[in-house]
Amino acid sequence: MKSYDCIIVGSGISAFQLAKHLDKNKQVLIITKLTKEKNNSFKAQGGIAAAMSNDDDWRLHYEDTIQAGCSFQKAQEVEALVKNGPALIQSLIDEGVPFDLNEEGDIRFGMEGAHSRKRIVHSGGDATGKNVMAHLQTTTNDNIEVIENQFVYECIMSPTSNRCIGIRSKSQEGKNYQYFAQSIVLATGGMGGLYKSTSNESSITGDGLALAYRAGAELVDLEFVQFHPTLLHVNGACKGLISEAVRGAGAVLYKGNGERLMGNEPPFFDLAPRHIVAKSIYEARTSGSEVFLDISMIQDFSTKFPTIASLCEENGISINEGAIPVIPGAHFLMGGISVNANGETTVKGLFAVGEAAATGVHGANRLASNSLLEGLYYGKKIAQYLNELSDEGAQEFIEVRTKESVEILELPTKKEIQDKMLHNCGIVRTQVQLENVSKWLEKYAVAHESLASYQTPQIERLFMLQVAKLIVTAALTREESRGAHQRADFLETSNEWQDIHMIQSKKGIEKRALYEQSQVEVNA
Ligand code: SIN
Image (cartoon, rainbow, N blue to C red; front, side, top):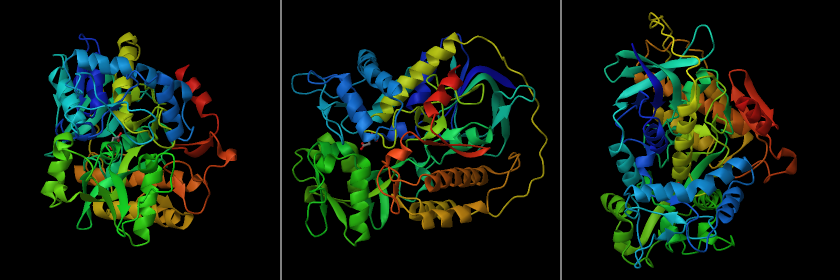
């Protein structure tokens, strides 16, 4: 049995940033489901938002973030995030990350949806995630061990203190392992893979959310699933992201009949907040119209967006013809595992960071290019907190439980789950749709105390069903439309619901108005 100071589950930007900032005398394990390149950070085409240009200020970045998120954030966390942006980018520059420059040799700032200034830094055009991740992964210290291709299926809880003390995992051959640590950090990303159309890496199906829930932690705001407006749509299937930076460079959305799609949505038009653009595309498609992104005005498209140009080419779409067929797809979860400012969940010893965590910075809809920033900021912040943590609650070791015989249910396929979620809990939801899918999910809501005898694909689907049920329950409970949560049967944001958050745990769902207060208590 191996023990560490810190175990990080997941291998995206927040995981590696955290590992990098932990003291070098700490033994750190990064454990990841597939290889360390298979994550959303690596795929990220958009850049990192930071108020660094001469005409910008953190206050403007703050206002844009709050406005995109429909004022549903923890204001002090948003302030800390945007204030820290420039220094975090500067340290990557100092370490040699090649951010794109303009003709004068200064950082080039790009535009994306709902930003009032050009403030997005990119690297390699649309390869920011790949370049930043390559940097973080090649500059890790010797104290960091990386285990790939192991699926973490359980948080080990102390039998005496209700504290998380380790994890159980399975290799691809089905062999069970367990690892112990003083701190366990879930950095597993979101849950885009719960939906048929998604920009996410296909393995991102909500594992961390299910792990935290099963360990007894609280989850919050799960109804806020952001749909990115523009995914490449070929032969009825979604083939990958067409970055918002393309619209930032001037591209325009058109309906099949040649009408401009966002013509009536001032002040941002095609660069309105994502939930607005995604809903417009959804409505156009529902009324029978295809939607295209006109890129004909962008000079040197393939140089500016090499990843997207290759994606189009691989899928038979000619860049030279200037029109890319697009469809919205699940992109980002604003809610997640409830954490305080230091990443602590409501279970002792268990932390969450990155998209898996609900830090309160995104509110009801995330501002473009704030997610890599969130990973950099909280990865470093949590590392600093853990570096100061005393040895209190040091590791206890417990034996692997003997295999229990558990009933193995006939489970739906991944595709069935993804179809059900897209059609019943997608961009626009109704009570009837949500109740239908909720009833369907109910059949699979069994306890599954031990998962040791299950195979990884079965556990993955059980986790998907669990997370789907939590999202649907939150979406049913929120009887209003706000940001990424659009209910066809309820109007936009009513004051009565201001600041009420849906918190879920094994105890059930709570509509908690004093969310901020509860976070203060977690901190105490
Ligand atoms: C994009 O490139 O459009 C995605 C960036 C983001 O999600 O912030």
